Image 1 (tube, rainbow over the protein chains, first blue to last red):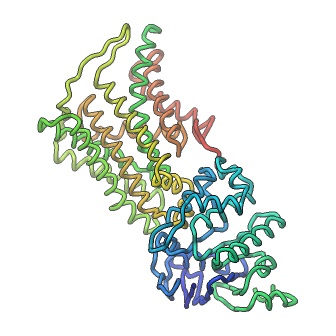
Image 2 (image 1 turned 90 degrees about the horizontal axis):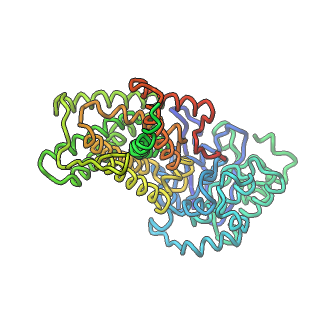
Length: 236
Length: 290
């Protein structure tokens, strides 16, 4: 589904990711873990086209998207959920869900009826139906995260790139969000590349895991094997 | 104190305020969406005024003059974004750099207009002005046309923002440009769109000003300053705020005449701005950011 080969990128001429290579298969959840500043978010941004790749290649469904803009990649079926500011706080829940479908229905992708998609989102996330007329900025942290997942569903992606889905959430909500992501993969056959600091939770739902350190991928391991280690902090 | 004059001053204030409201919506739409302090909006207004004057001098109907002003204004605004601001943004220019570039464009543009059309004022022909009287209050058809066209444009823009797909995209970029891009909205295209829409309004505004008075190469700055003040009074990012700011500014400018001599009336806008910035810095119709 996704292949990243020798990616090098950064900000304002300063490299932050060096020769990163990873892959995500169809229907697979892959976690990208590491300390703050390891280059995880930068990698996601570059894959989705929000940050240009300086070197290396990114292929999505056999197509080279290394130089593609984010808008085009969204139309191809990539959906990026940032770690913060992940909803449009000035817009209502309903408008957020509508806007999330802006890129749907082009690049040869068949799109489903918007009402049917909306009904399905409300079935999975009933809180969004109750809050549909409410401004997203007035939702609680957990509700906002639910809305961002609802927006991802509205975008009908083939692959989700999720940045720190547990950030700022109470432990019980973290578990709920992770379970929801896992359920979506099962129901929709989505692929997920997830950056997460909460390694326990990430390993709980992931199939494979990459460890990043100082801008480089230093380890690839199955999530089950990594979770079985006595400690994994020494890897960071 | 001339209390008998109050109804007349209120009417004049509402008519002027309607025009300010339209300019405030045009300036505010660009500023709130792109975070660009588009000082050269004044040049767009002047270009629109001269476009209308040129059409009027050829004996064509006034409506065509308005359309030409809007078209030229929209083109000037879109080109300013595409040719000046976008390359600067791509190079990571700071807001101050962009502001200075905008100021420079305004000064250079006014010089070009003066070179092409001369320094003298030019009237807009093709509209026969008449007086209107209702009891003790009086106005003119020019002022009524100015207010009517202004409200028409404000309502059109409000409908665009709230009832169309691209209007929602504009509000999305305004709320969170990064997230909008992550969901496939081309930020650059949306910026170009709001520059075009805001500039059509400014161009038409220039034609209306030329109708009320005349077109001069430096006519743009004062009304755009008023628009900018109205935006900050009303609250950035809100059409309702810009409208309220504009109308309030128009009313206070005229009602200030009751207690202030004519030469002091221009300070009313700034006094109002200072008061609002001190008491409610986010503007009168500010949204609580989540």
